Length: 152
Image (cartoon, rainbow, N blue to C red; front, side):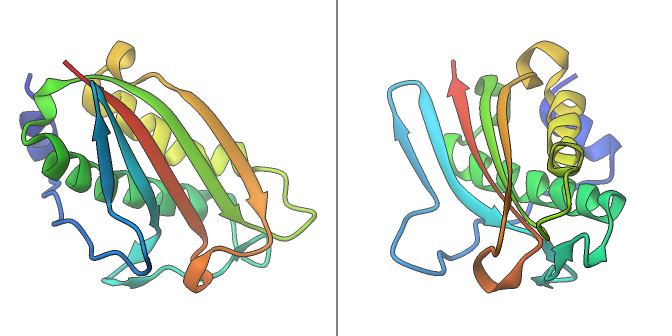
């Protein structure tokens, strides 16, 4: 099944690339790698703001990470033209806006990781990963994620 067929079966339409909010580009391709800039969580077209452990729980954070993964695929599509050319999701880095006592950043980030495995399959979608708890994310977003992918 193609990546687009899988997305369609999930009822997902890829969003367009969002305009950068500062002095950077949405992606850089070098050789067979594509580096995507960090994408923040959005819900209903607005910043999904808040802190994990202070009004936002792990499950909602996981939904935010999944929403970011969908946005990342929209940018990745713009970068490579065809998501079926992706041979591997290489690395995911997640910044979780959380209070000091919150320790489930890794579970929040699973929202993106599990989505990539679902869309690309367990081999292409499995990736190296880091998940950090941070004091703040731009615009007060609850989660920010960046991605590195390999193109065949």
